[in-house]
Image (cartoon, rainbow, N blue to C red):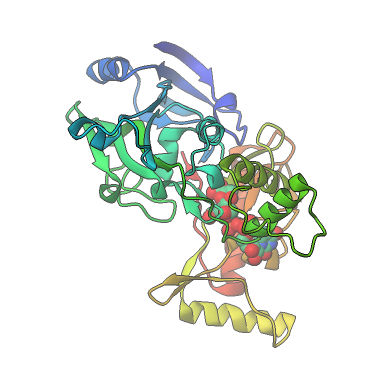
Length: 374
Ligand code: EPU
């Protein structure tokens, strides 16, 4: 266990805010976490548990103690049927893997791709750690963490005992879980059990992912121009590693590398609005872009429509805009950036408010931040 006092958090938030905390504690096992739980009164409050700080905007110095998990292991679990009725020669499709909360999320994605296991490949390249991925229900390119999570193991901070939740008990939604809402602050995720597949194949239905994967396969086989090219349907050619590489390059082309330009990824959630709100946005857009213009949207079920916040923000003229040290990323306006490396939390918040106000004025839609303000 490592304990630091008055520690800079610059390296602990991908936005690169120059803030600090009174105390920072990294533990490396469940036993150490339990020990901390028993001796909590020795540390300055308030308490906050973070992953890599990739979805946080620190708005000021944190006056209490920040905890971080150094629980790092990836272990294939015995198949649930194996004990009751051993089937040594038959390969089952599902492989359950337990991953420590402190494992870097993308290391886990790479681990799966290296072993030809399908599951998190579309979530490759998302910054942060595995425990936070289960709290935030990270998502990208048509897949959410909840789709592959089977169980989440936690320390219950009220009772001090370990508890295991099934996915269905975690109340997952779009970038939501009970760990962020009804049970906020009560549980600390120590490990996550994922269900991976040897055979399920890729999920390519989001945006241009299928096209990008087909181009990659064609490039690999040297079959770019062949009319009869079947690369798009040739399942043999599609491996988790190939899909992962494609996703990494798509992300690379759209999102800033936090090591170069500070950001916390998407700053706002995509609003999910009643159809009547969507119709209003559509009629505003028709006035500006012509009668045939269709506002990008996705059916969210139950009469609700998801509208890309990136589009709303771009329509308000913010794309690529820089204000002082804070910016709106030129290739993806949903991402606010620490454009110069010297942005203060106040500058990011001022930009956030101005963007949200303008979207409200123009479209009557309230944007809510995806990034947690601390
Ligand atoms: N768009 C624009 N202008 C732009 C970029 C996008 O109008 O400059 C519109 C387009 O209509 C585009 C749509 O926005 O089709 C969606 O864009 P994109 O596919 O880039 O996805 P997103 O909705 O902006 C979400 C996640 C991202 C995730 C991508 C890909 C949220 C809040 N964000 O962004 O997650 O990588 O989908 O699946 O849901 C993150 O959470 O930090 C994050 C980066």
